[in-house]
Image (cartoon, rainbow, N blue to C red):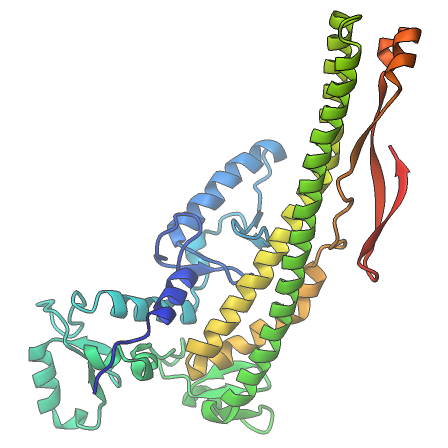
Length: 399
């Protein structure tokens, strides 16, 4: 009996397949090394805009290095090249096709005739959607009797989703990639095996023989991404707490200043207000000075968190939804990313300081007696050293 398909995977697909620039579903996607994907035209506009901005600063030198809009990982577009020349990601394209099938099953057109009638089925062997008429012609052709054909309703079932994906083909021979060359670490077709990857110089295997091993390797990479993501989450929480403490201490310092101001207000109202305002500015300046390194550190940690999260999401999606050839072809790339992600980790994961601002007021009686309104008190911030191994801070000085 037919059952309703689980909406959770579709929601997961929509998140993976959303362009963070235009926040729409990807169009002609291009995937960067950090596994973030963007619409071709969005990334093209992004590069063109930043190229103009950076060209003004660089004075005539055409910029070739840009930062990912999502996590600031660097990518290169050489002078004279365009986003059009970037290779598309087969896995992302297949996921888009599946999402389209799930969302727009009533609007998919026949790919076999010029009439563009609504499709009712898909031939898995031909990799084409068929209308009723073309399906009849297809079934009546004896040479195609062994082809597997599924209705759109059958394709929408979880167990059949992988069958809707197009199979990658060899660019040289236009044949389905059925083997994996361990020597070159690439997918190859039957002709490639005979011509370019012969034994004993090359060691190759059928995809089904190596997919389990590669999937396990992807799980190991996913564990690395998850660990780094969790550490980045904790680091971000600590920085947020430090920023909140800094904000609260800023308010407390101002309260202390206002309290002292009130005590001597009757005697020196105008001068006191002037000095108090100056102290407010000092507090603000101290706050601005103290918040900048925290904000920069938080931005770095958030970028690192985004890198770890996007890599984890990408790897999990490959494990959950990738076809045999996708798992094998992307395993090496994901492994490399997992091996190098720790190098991108911020040098200091704990907050650079815990956000202390303290106003050290002098006794009001002494202040009035000395009539030195430019010496009401001292505003400073404690400098802390974070001991990562002990997960704590030690105060070193008051600035």
